[in-house]
Image 1 (spheres, helix red, strand yellow):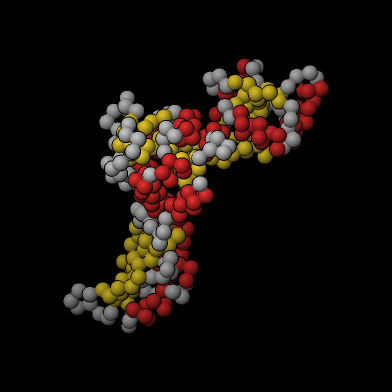
Image 2 (tube, rainbow, N blue to C red):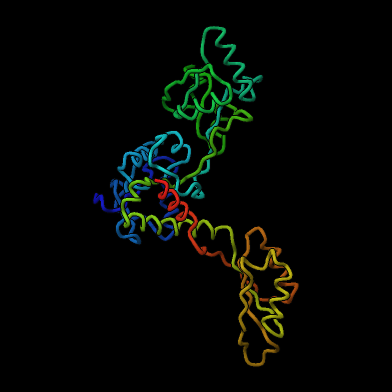
Length: 338
């Protein structure tokens, strides 16, 4: 792979693989992979960018060491694997998919253990009896940090082998700390989560090596384009574009009625244009277009109807670009610190 190109690491396994490919396609920067057996690909819309498929658990370390410039990874994986004083930083914290939680799960039969404080008391009792609370997990760093911060000091970590949910039933661990999206698998294995036992709320994020990006104008420009498309796609997901025809004496008169409800009058305000009606149509008609939050759709429709609106259509924008790309501006600020 040409090291002058920007290298993007994408999960080759785990639940993030297919959603990542779909997400990049929805952002108009689709990843083209000729064969599922190939571990490299390209992004036709971004000349100078190359994709490499890596195990999710390895992506953060690959970026830390400089083998890749950018990478898509679960936020919990990033926190677990990153170098404390390394060059890897988060560029987009929430890509909008891959939501899950890293949780503490204990056997259902532990009826007296429902919180981390209860678990700390139990671990102290075990210690007095001559043994440690055994915790099976793949997230050693995060578990240690969380447990120590909660005053849970007596435990030992057990290497994960196969499905973690089976560890307590098989007898080689007392509890587990693992990722869950719905909790169904935990419940099916007679495990329950603690009321305050969420260690990390995670989702897919985009991370990058700021040292490598700062050294290459080409890589930085490609990163800007990626961030622009991701941010515009994510921003557009929260809005509808509504168009209605309204009769009025002038644009100003129509605008006055529309903006009587400023909270549903568009981001900056309505766009109003004269409609050149068909022969025989009566009065002056104007097309009013608003971009509103999705949660306010019915309010906006009712308001437009109330001021004489008809032919109301609703569309979902694919992208919404702001005056600047906030995530790119944040990256530039990080590079100034480096």
